[in-house]
Image (cartoon, rainbow, N blue to C red; front, side, top):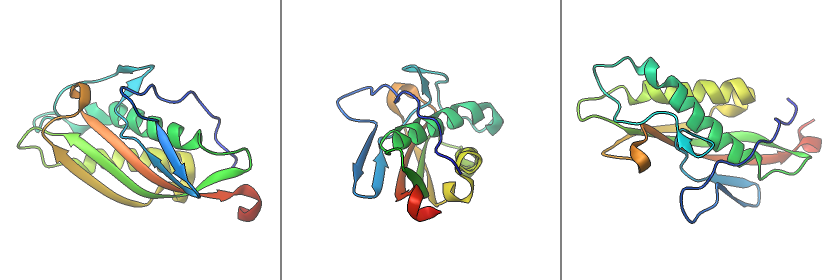
Amino acid sequence: MSQLDKESNPIPQGNYVPASRFGNMIYTAGMTPRKEGVLIQTGKVQTEESVSIYKAAVQQAAANALTAALNTLTAQERIEQILSLTVYVNAAETFQAHTSLADFASAYLYEKLGSRGIGSRAAIGVASLPGNAPVEIQLVAGVSSEEKAN
């Protein structure tokens, strides 16, 4: 797979960088579903609503995390593997379909990276998230050189 086009990093909402790299490991900050710095959806994820209404928000948060990771790469590098995906859900107390929301993130990463986009995963319900975002996504990725991968 060729290197994905680099986009602008998500706009940090505090004193941090979108992604940090140490050697061949990339750690992203937690990414909410912001587009150009503005949340595209807010509010707690509710039990009585179809999880599909959160799909765009989950995909945006995943896209932000992937973009941040990709922007740490040089031209001859690629993401070899998503090692860990953590999906935080701003869940109403009775909500229990956390993994269904995480599946949207996994599907997005698979669409962009193929099997390299699927790694270990955790879906965690929390009492609140920054800006009242419905989800926040953080990932860890391993890097390899395109030359070595071919």
